[in-house]
Image 1: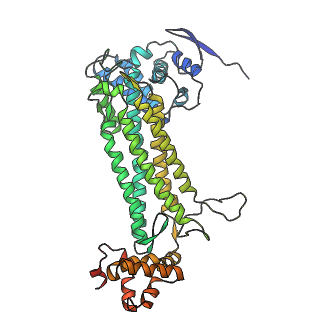
Image 2 (image 1 turned 135 degrees about the vertical axis):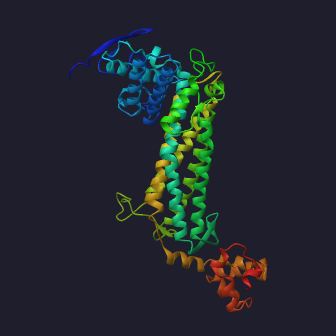
Image 3 (image 1 turned 120 degrees about the vertical axis):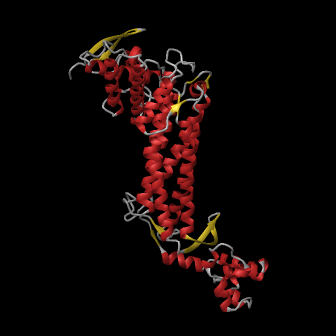
Length: 473
């Protein structure tokens, strides 16, 4: 194998050998060597956000007369290539690094600088004519770039993956609820038989959970739209133009169609990560919702002989390496694992948000990683759950109907007619003798067969306002 070639670059600490074909520079190389921890890199959306920010910063500096047009255009072209994913392999730094994300900000600055210099006929490593700090990073600090990149990346992921996935799941659940609203089944509380409920009503509860989850996510977006850019090192805006933050936010809004704006208070925007913590909390709530009804579907699918066997989820793959014919609820299981991961991510994000020190939060990379992972896997899980579980499950109508008719808890409907004590006596006798409530209440002379047929109609019990007057009509 040929020996790898290196070029020598210099930074404020001295000389650093950098792979000759790398677009990154000395500071990135130091970080690669300093943080061989997890092998986890920043995701595509974060690199995209960094590229968009560097593009917008160069354009704002050009508009403000702070950057030469030739240099600005080269930086903008290189930054857009980063945003579009052309140089993702040039971002090798582990997420477990300096807490401000300075290494990754400088990674972007060096890649864009070297690429811009190539575009202008120069060579990597020369820092001329485009310098990574003086030109690419002009008017910026890692301390306002990385918090802004978290917000931009998270907003993009929410709009492009999470909300579309949740809306699709909601629509799929609503259709399924409408399809099966005619079917009465046994309700359950404490995992025990309870009063009848229509299958459509049960599914409508799941749909409403998703609908509220969408609203919760949307409610967090106005805070996510605030960007720290313009605050530079500690929030005071040193070494940047007073209009820089506002202009960059406006350019980013124009590019993405999202309502980004300069932070109302730069000290809050850099010292804290409350918007990320807030969004993570809403993600956790959505994860809890998905876990809840994915688990309901697992229970309803259980069997097919010794379980509830009310529904049959689509058979997607063999379920056992030893038991022929076994099929498992794999999508529901995957969704539960996604929810568990989101719960864990939320804990990390909460710690990260709480551990901001004075004028800067120094847990930014781990907040970014966990937040973006939660958004992505929740959005994808919602779509998979809709398409591979909800849309295609079959209903065992015969079994559901037979279980409803044999449910002694139907005796609850007798309370307004014969009183709680007599109704309890009927229910206990029916349970003891393995008979229906309808048979027992007639045998005990408490109702005529016609009255029992009308009052113990399971469908009537699923309607609002079940009262004595209603059942006597």
